[in-house]
Length: 374
Image (cartoon, rainbow, N blue to C red; front, side, top):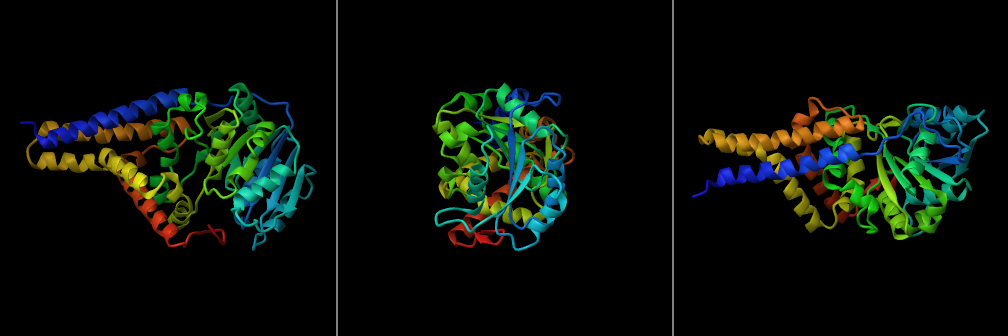
């Protein structure tokens, strides 16, 4: 008779091994910009801002240091702080900068898609680069290097993920999962070749888009009510016949998305309810993640306490395979690996809790972001 604990440990090890192998393959295929590569096309950088007075300065200074970009268009989206004054003070003497006044989003629109829509309509350059206020560009040709990569890989929309900076313990546990999830579960080359809009991923912190493809896809108007407008835009580009790609942008930019655990929890609450599909689908995904990545240490402990060394070894190998996946993800995307990767089981528990909280708050109509109801 097969020992059920041994069977469980073996299943965990096989599943973790297969997924980590996929992580290793994806990491080896990930596009990376060449720092010396430049683009000669006219490029507009588009920066939507809402209540970002306390964090926009590093981003804006890094934008002003960029070379070979035509313009920097900024939209103050109804800020209730002094965001506009900060922009005017820092960018007063750079003729490339235009500051637009935002307006409340019309019915049926969320704030960020509307702000991005307004920004895109304000320029006629052939390439659009959308950037968030928490992104800091790392060298003077970061933007043109990203545009050159867009052209080199023959994509219409490129998402070069910045290096994720995590300050608090909670950020270090959760934020690396952003890159780990798509490196582990998304077949990158199949995503690029497939015409299926459902097979798409993107990160809105830094997006490089061919302007003609953007307009063929309907721009942000097609995702006006989507909380995950970045992924929605990538799907729209695919529906219009375009090609999308992901890249490691850690050599181009860094990004600290949240300032501590409370900010992170609120940020994830506004979007996680939409990330994994409806509640039943999200429950299934989270159950698999918990079984493959959180349960193995407990399985190993139970096996050790009951004198089953083979089962304990297999369960420990499942845990270590998950750790290897996190370490390889960090190496591929400029993140921090040690000792955070060892706590991967805890990371999955926190992701589960954040997702459940997001669904509960969404069902109760209590989601807000930057002072607006989501």
